[in-house]
Amino acid sequence: MSLPAASRLWRSALRTPLVPAANLSSKPAKHHISVGEQAVAMTALFVAILGPSGWILAHLEDYKKR
Image (cartoon, rainbow, N blue to C red; front, side):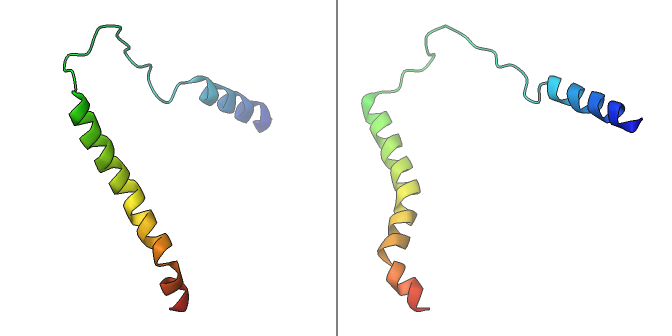
C-alpha cells in the first residue's frame, strides 16, 4: 500500500520546477562592451582555464616520477 503513495510523491516531485522560470527581456543591452574589452575578457578566461591544464600536461612526466 505504500507503493502508490511513494509513486504519487515521486510524480509530484518531478512536476514541481526546481529552478524558477527566468525573466527574459528582448530589450537591447544597457552597457555595450567594446571589442577590446571582449578580447581582454576572453584572454583572461582562456588563461585561467587552459593555463593550469597546460602546465599539468607539460609536466606530466615529472608527476609520473613521484
